[in-house]
Length: 234
Image: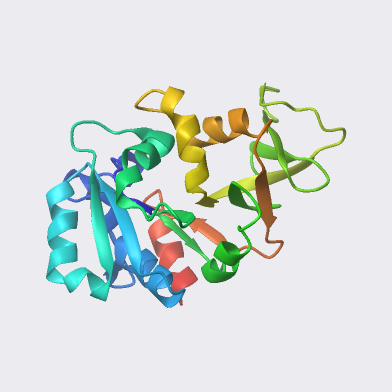
């Protein structure tokens, strides 16, 4: 699933006339780069959620023959559902027997997506993390099982936070979600964040971290990151 519904407010004025997913980098839209990375990794069915300038994304996919893939649209034009709500709303579009790789449309990285996907068989969810410096960290016990979240600037914590001397890593926005978790979403509202969901579920379910020490990742969320993105792709 590609999260492509966001308003892209940090990329204004470009996103005054187009969705973030279609902002060009190195001659192709961000959406194109993520689709090609998924296709190269062997994925054949992709769900794309849409909201902001949704018709432009749908028309772009149609014009390119869905890149030879089974691409399905999860329509959020009636209201953005956030990351957790977006997955929940798209439930009927997924193969119920297969894990779901989730990828933000504005993330470029050097991760091997097929390797990440194959590593996720033993957990209900697997989150790609790295030692990247940030203000907000996910906390893991010694077996790399999710145990909490911490804002090191404010001291705020969420989740069980039961591990002694937890390992702290930055989340990448790329993760693998097992359909076995869908029943737990029934009690959640229409709109919610997936990290909050994971932090509640991790006490009973195996939500694991996939550590990539040499992860190179670029969040193409601001205007000044577009030039960096071109260099990244080169």
